Image 1 (cartoon, helix red, strand yellow):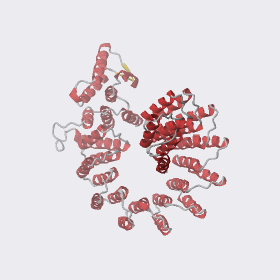
Image 2 (tube, rainbow, N blue to C red; image 1 turned 90 degrees about the vertical axis):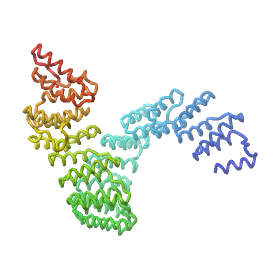
Image 3 (cartoon, rainbow, N blue to C red; image 1 turned 90 degrees about the horizontal axis):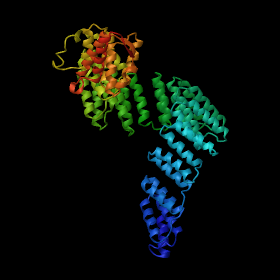
Image 4 (cartoon, helix red, strand yellow; image 1 turned 180 degrees about the horizontal axis):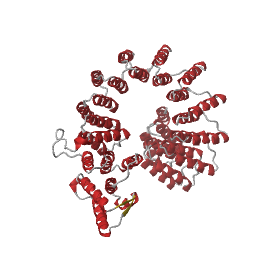
Length: 601
């Protein structure tokens, strides 16, 4: 249409002859709307060369086009030029700029732009605030967004559903469902009726926090108000019911949908199939799957994966493979989840040959294995007592740029511990910490049990596994404490905390320390030395006193210093650490004064 208009102008007034600013504005606006901002810019420069003066509309069209491109430098130049020509940016221009700032990830600048509006004698309208509220909610700044809703009300602007819905969605995503509910009440009291999006957000939020009964009541309210739920809302409800084991109620909702002529899609059926599998009813899952196919609804890869997951859960690997054959015949091809599910199924049956066969098929079909795939295989080899093979796979996954997660590391650590290979498990733990992968309770349990079950072997250096010079901090610290006749359980906890602090994972160290005290272990000098190292490595040595409220005499401080010096051996450069210097100073002071040294622990 723009080119047609340009041709008409050329035909009437001659090529390149645009008679007045109105025609320029029309063409510039047209090109910018089409996304041909460069053409718009060329015409903008041309009109000025011909002596025409750009109007507010001209600047508005240009700025809107540049907003779509995110060219804020040129936008700022145009705003300055416009002001120099005695024109003030209208609210629509500012709204476009603010919206573009949010769309291109500049939320701080977007909010600053709102503040500049008043300075430029341009009052924001409710659309301005709606843009800001929506933009902030999208980046998770819901509470800040709510403040702008209050600001809009203070300016005597009337919020509408576009003001409330992003906030309701935002609060629901954060699990603050009751705040979202209050906003719906406020919205209704102001005369705006919630729509499907608003209700959908609330239902999703309630299901997310486990309030399924409240979510069902919202559905009843929707029906009562003559606004029946859509497929998306039904799907969310069924998913929540299935996870709660309320499969019968979920199936009743399916019947309700069919009775109301709301056609369930593949996601609805897949949700019910997955729920049936979760609840151990494979026959029901198969019936739902076949019913979906009979209705002419294509399961898609997600639907097939749900069914394959069911077969694998019950160890029916032949059925799982037949299901894969069936999906391929329908030109639905297995993905990472399909292969990983089947591999895990074989692993649970301790059939590593079957698992590797599927793994090789996966690679052959150019489907890249992910962390779940590799972790399943590693788990299988560890369960079968072949940790060396698991370690080979671990190296392979890293060479393929697949990043191990806490489950991968914990599985391998557990496999090594099970076979009494403490140095290998300790090295794996060290690597985990170096890569800033936070351990969990499973990791700790494997390590604690591994250390305690193999403590007698640790008194002698494991020459069979490593060279004489090989040193591993976890094993070294635990062995030293066992030789010093510490309780093995306490020694295991402390050895892990020592490693966590060495790798500046203080948060994890404090969490484990709290679990340790709940088990009845008292805080001690080794724990003190480890935590002191951690805070010094973080550059917070001036804060060390605030971490302790226990009393240590000179003997305890000497013990702490001894273990601190052990930690020093593992520091780069093997220099005397700041922590050791503090402990030596405290020990010398205690030796001279002979009082108890009080520490805020």
